[in-house]
Image (cartoon, rainbow, N blue to C red):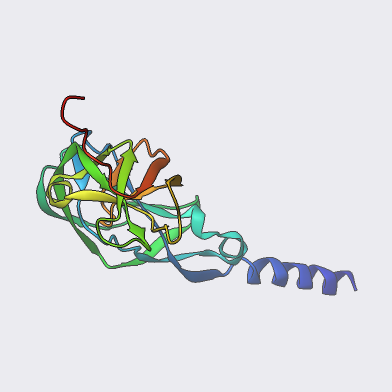
Length: 206
């Protein structure tokens, strides 16, 4: 009986140490990105990495345990292709990479640009010219890849429904830029005041 138990234990240990493979979608971590540079690629792929190792380790493996690293210290504006090899894949000890797909990543880079743009209030439910609209603050600061930032004419508030209001009403909204590569610096609530009726010009002599 002891021999049977020993044989069973040995089989269990060996069978759970047989090499296994698993495929994982993993993120790319960019190392040492220059401060004046932005990645301007609209999509960045998540490579699929096939990993092999003992069954007991593969069973414990999580997608967060594996990632790819790309060094960008010497990157400049323009396009560049990076190879993804075993040197770029970070794995737990005792596991090895079998394959990574795709084997290359093509990225675009642009100089970083920061500037101010006006905020346009998006107010609905009012007849044209029936109200004055005051936006506070009137501008926001945006940042991102130069070519994308230069194409932004203005930021826009979320829709504000002003049907049926009388006199002066103030709404709180948020400003956004539709380009996903352009970010708002220090986002803050936007106050939009809708003043119904035209403001009469001052009379002569006053």
